[in-house]
Amino acid sequence: AQTVTQSQPEMSVQEAETVTLSCTYDTSENNYYLFWYKQPPSRQMILVIRQEAYKQQNATENRFSVNFQKAAKSFSLKISDSQLGDTAMYFCAFMKPYNNDMRFGAGTRLTVKP
Amino acid sequence: NAGVTQTPKFQVLKTGQSMTLQCAQDMNHEYMSWYRQDPGMGLRLIHYSVGAGITDQGEVPNGYNVSRSTTEDFPLRLLSAAPSQTSVYFCASSDRTSGSYEQYFGPGTRLTVT
Image (cartoon, rainbow over all chains, first blue to last red; front, side, top):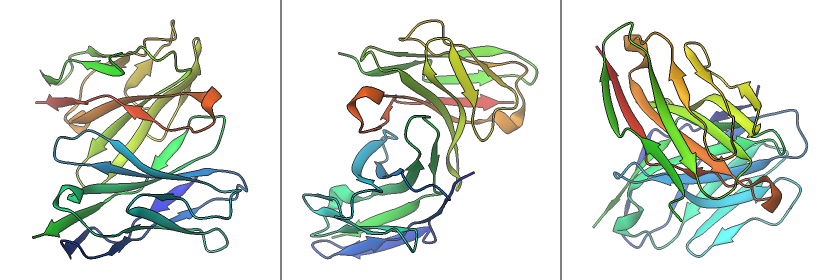
């Protein structure tokens, strides 16, 4: 079974600065999808960004970008120009296509300080 | 378009009682899943479905049953509640045909078993 590891339980960053959240995963698959989800205090899960393993180009969504290192099985999230609204739990997730079996890491609690 | 809805939002059960958590989606998604979220452990997959009539076990299926008689509904049954099942439960759906595999989450149900 695939495992996802987030080694940073908590992180903090000053408003307007950049922060990187780490994620590693273990799989023998060649084709898969990786995700970062955000969970604010409201508890709602919100997709931040996704990456398809067969695409070498790193995904970007506005202030959010990833560093996808397939050989190293690493998938880090960079948040630029951090905003107070970025304060949340962030979860890394792995999924094989076509079987709907998604596995999550334990999460990183990010606090953006004014 | 309500997205993914879950009922109830909160529930308190006594040990040994049974109940059903309801989940419905109006996006015609083939994939649906149930997760539980415990402090410090992220989301763990309980059961999932890739279409009406098709279900499979995730990481932590013991003590739970599911069925999928329609595309829209995916109820989760607790057979005999135990304190270890105290958790927040999330239902999610995704659109296989889009190829994105993004999971759309419901608002969650907080369950306490005493």
